Amino acid sequence: MSESLPPLPAGWPTLEPGWVWLCGAGPGDPGLLTLHAVNGLRQADVVIYDALVQKAILDWAPQAEHIYAGKRGGKPSSKQRDISLRLVDLARAGKRVLRLKGGDPFVFGRGGEEAQTLIQHGVNVRIIPGISAGIGGLAYAGIPVTHRDVNQSVTFVTGHDQSGETPQSLDWHAIAKGSQVLVIYMGMKHVEQIAASLLAAGRPMDEPCAVVCSATTPEERVLETTLGRMAADIAAAGLEPPAILCVGRSVLMRQVLDWQALARGEAPRDLDPLGRGRPAEVS
Image (tube, rainbow, N blue to C red):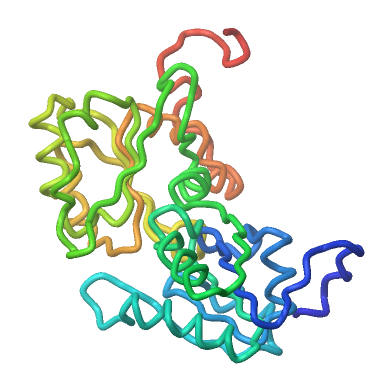
């Protein structure tokens, strides 16, 4: 597969021996890789990849050694210290190292920790951003993370901290009041507690919510629900991580923007889900 794309033009970055490129692999669909990511995959001696990186993405680097370093909640996982120091060791051995992380490495991906460790040990790094699931995954589900008639702000929140529990440092009351749309990563394990915290802070029971599982992959599943019913509906549907939770009226836009359903020949459920009462082009 690495030969099926034409060579990149001269002047593109070279992955030098002893360097580590910290690279975002996007939310799942291999087509959402950046060209810088493909460039790195073609050159790498070693690819150290996370649990959510699709095999089809690794196929872009058939010449490289592939090392799994996934971290999944509730399952045996590599220790972060061991991952970071292995990157150091490989770089010091003169390898061209591509550290491949799902989504964007700096969005709840521990990329900042790994990059800091590398630099503290004298290893050169390059950061290659990726499409975060909280944006790209919702877009695949037909949910715009911002919409002029819904929100002028959006808040990204992690559903658990380093201990695996709901972050105690989060001020859920301030979060609930401060942003019209909330996007919650890694929140499935504590969805009941998260929903209860938002309801206690004043978010309405009937506020639209969506749960997007395995976003942008063939296994993608989307649940539309409300804040009051979200935890019960997730359990009833048997949904499993990885998932993105979205809270806010922008979820309603899926009724008209579910482009994957449209591609299957299904009609939009509602051409005006926000009840604007006028065409979309009229401001």
